[in-house]
Image (cartoon, rainbow over all chains, first blue to last red; front, top):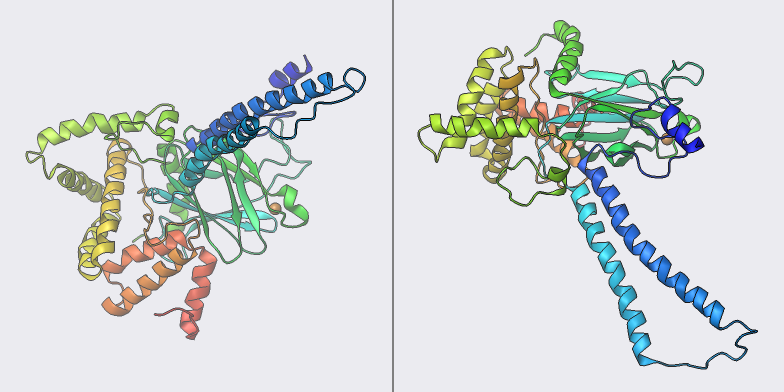
Length: 263
Length: 181
Ligand SMILES: [Cu+2]
């Protein structure tokens, strides 16, 4: 009952963590869907092994109880059983490894041509996002800082310590290239719904490709200990339609282009 | 992470997972019609890109697409294999974005630096650095403001953090830039 209340009475935090959540957040990208599917695939073998091992264990305890059977059987060698118990456990990891590697390498893939590059730059303790695809000079760039909403500040319906003042707006159903880097210490850019957790290493640009499949607001948190306010460095990704993205970006870009003059 | 390739028969994970493929279906709907218009089926794809890009150029005030077309032609003389790969990827992208703009006509052109086959890994630091150097070498060779170099500028601006670019610009002015220029 309480669980049901939690389910339905919490103010829907879109794609953020829920109280007492056990599973993954809903997938927003094919990558996350792959991760969830792999989890379920592996769980099949996991439960199989659990049941089998428990059966052996309980059976052994039952049949070789010291009162019931004080002298255990003295078998020290059996070729058949030894072959079986060597072959089977070595096949199972193979069944786990094949989908796992397939997913791993598909996540690593960067050959798909992205439509948009967004630079997520971690700072102590906020994030800067740069949209530089539309620049015509080095100075002009669509850059903004994204700070967390302080703990005593959120409005009704906002998630505590998950909300930021400026969200990253991305178009849905578009190949995005996220370039992750920090300006000071290591950070991480992680959004569970999109299956992304990319470390930000100083002096290095890490690329991760995502393609958000549905419009929505996705929440994430810093995942690399980066100092005192590590817990107060959330990430909010807002996926909008391509059309809305175009108008949003151009609206933010126009005041800047008026100064420098577009090419 | 399969690109929207309608020719591939087995659906990949990403394709299976797509919720509604409005954009893709519109693509497939428009393509056969356009192929009928274009008489030569062999050149259909390239013709299509050209015919679609031209109205976009006319509509937009920015000269980016036309610049790119010329720079592509210029670059293919200099770097043969890479240019070919880039051009292929670029035309594919332009095709995609071209369709988009005919449908929705947003104010900006959704386009960025293409994936580079020299840098296939997660670490893209060298990609950014190389693009920056390529731009400045291009400027050195062809002169300031040469339209062929615009696309390299676009690429490095898309890839490099602004802070890095500022620092490198400063270093170039002071003559302490660590790269081969
Ligand atoms: Cu942190």
